[in-house]
Length: 118
Image (cartoon, rainbow, N blue to C red):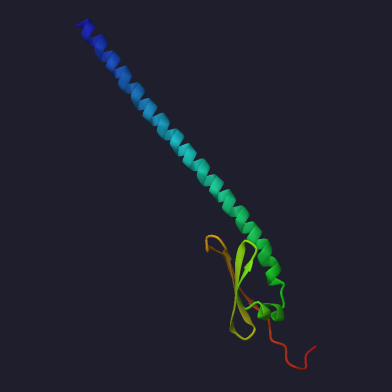
């Protein structure tokens, strides 16, 4: 009887170790996925910061500058799309050139100057 119990204890220990190994591997996999997600989020944030700096410069352009850039134009790693749905109103979209993913979008108002204005 004692011999049968020893075999059962050994089997229980093996099953327990297997359960711990599977749980440990699952935890390591989950940590790896979290690390990769964090890396991807940081890369995306860096990309958006670079795009935002470019967008800040675009926001300073005059109405004449925006008029000259109507349409879609490559701008380094970006594609800049400038549209004018109404006089004085410009819609600006910045997309990633390689993925075509929209990064930033805004509208700018530049009042049209009359002919007599300086």
